[in-house]
Length: 337
Ligand code: AQP
Image (tube, rainbow, N blue to C red; front, side, top):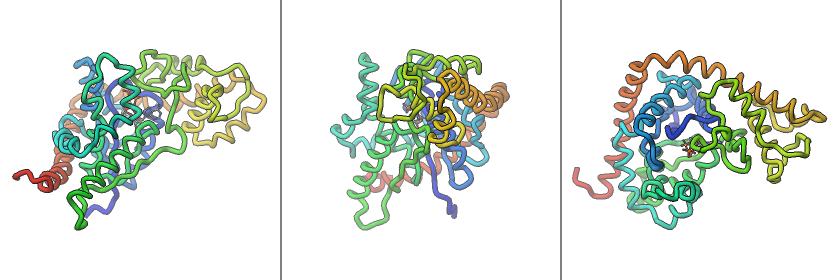
């Protein structure tokens, strides 16, 4: 019997992966591979809550797998699969929809943000997105879910749904669902936009200057950081509660997440120096972090069969695990099996 605890996480192929997705989630996943049984998916079902171009979605899904591997996720150690290739996710989501309240879903910040951004397409999938996410996590009996700060509210609702279901059907003990914990990195849990630093960096931002994509040319990454919005005060200080300082706070956070140095130490190193010097060093640190990822990504680019094989093998393995949970759920709710 496998004694390791289980990790589940994923990213939507809804755009090119940003430095935010990397620092908030994927970088963290890599370090967990030795200690945990890790399951990481390409969340294409989630991506269609916003309109996607079909060809691009297909391409981005495999590109995302390449990014996972290029960032250091080892397909021999971690289970990797495409969400839509494991039907149990959609099946469990339907059941759990019937155990989730409209009121709790309407409080979700992401739903509010995305429905104001996509006012012409406020679809039911966007509303029930957290239920699908709960299903993703609960199917694998995950102990830990490494995510950025924006997703912590969805982990909370996952816990609530799981506890509710267990409460209805498993009063005698032996719960169907394990209650998962969210897990955020020390630095980089919320990387902000480079152009509007009070807003989260997002891969679907219409302004490409707002985010750094791991697939941007290295020279473009450098330029984007050097032109990041800051303030006119000219002092490198970390004041997380001061919106006027949001640009510098963000660059300090990025520097800390990339170098592993504490923010206080970075601030001390830049005392008396200007924003120009600081931005140059942040740009260099980010470029050096991304350079080897890009090199590995480019190597993988020509090997489509290798990627397809990983997905096929992953979907079979994931279906076995997910099938066990789904069958317990079906039994509990009274479906004939
Ligand atoms: N800015 C961010 N800083 C830190 N972590 C972040 N994450 C997202 N943005 C940041 C984390 O990345 C993981 C994957 O996110 P997702 O693809 O599932 O969806 P998202 O959170 O909605 O990310 P985006 O980039 O903002 O996508 P779009 O633009 O499509 O909505 C999650 O762990 C998330 O916390």
